[in-house]
Image (cartoon, rainbow, N blue to C red; front, side, top):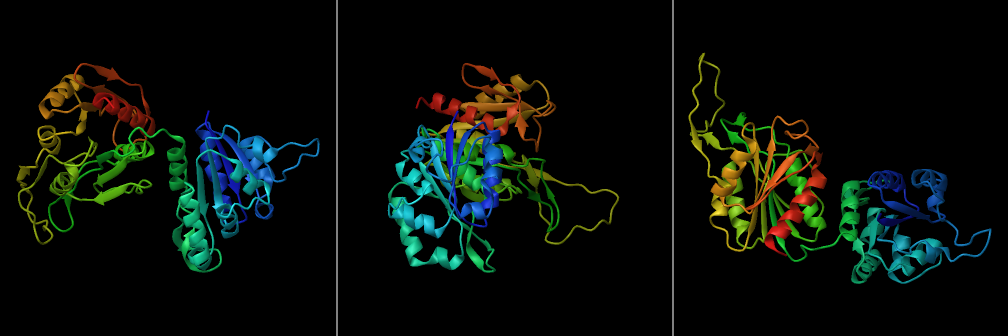
Length: 392
């Protein structure tokens, strides 16, 4: 069980920390909470104690006897995050000041550390605050940058606590091993759209969830990740370079531009096989009882990559509706993949837009049948298999 220590300071963004703790608890993390006196003015320790099912540390001394609490609480910690972090606490951390239990604990901790600032935009942009953040970075502390948004003080600007998903991803990154450190991973995701006219297109039901989960997982393992995504409502994964495209031709062009310097390529996108031969400049009018549409074949991106790879390890995806394994094996050989992930569209929990998937992993010598699981868990298994295939 991974142990995460959460330091909480006096910011209006403190309410988001409740959600962060709740999400971490659902992942079975062992959570310890330390609050500054200022933080207790916003939310009482009782609230956080109820979430973690243990006492919250506010005072460094125990009424029943002396304990070095700021030392004990960080023992065997896998990560220490201050969220939200005020300008005052950041200044203390940057300059090694330990005048309360939170800053003392942070100074004593030897685990990976994260700071997630939240404050007024002018306080954040102040030269002193920026200098303190740079000092923290120089110590190896990860800074989860705040976002631009409406602030409680009435101003609008950078200082809004980062999105909860980004904070959770930062924690996952800091506590994970990094076997892909220094490696480049290219991932495609989502559907493609082939235009008929300015208002209509041909597409499919892909949401992009599998590809985006793979991007998060690869980044967590230390890789530099480029995500080429078709139209999707999903938010960009934290610290992942995302390139938006629309058509299969657009995806092919972008994949080729990044392909040469990749170590791994994962083609999780549902790329359209065909596109209209002609695209109308104006909206097609509903004038006839019948409308004939001529289609032409798109470039098979996976097939092209499989036969032009040099150092790249390539993973393809296949969705079948019949003769699933037989068709997938044929595709694996034809496309010259190193790994092929196949699922059955009609298998419960394995179709489009779900948060789960049930697949088989096909390599040169084996077929591994996996149980139904979340796409996040599956992403970890796929990357682990790819690393083994590459022999790293």
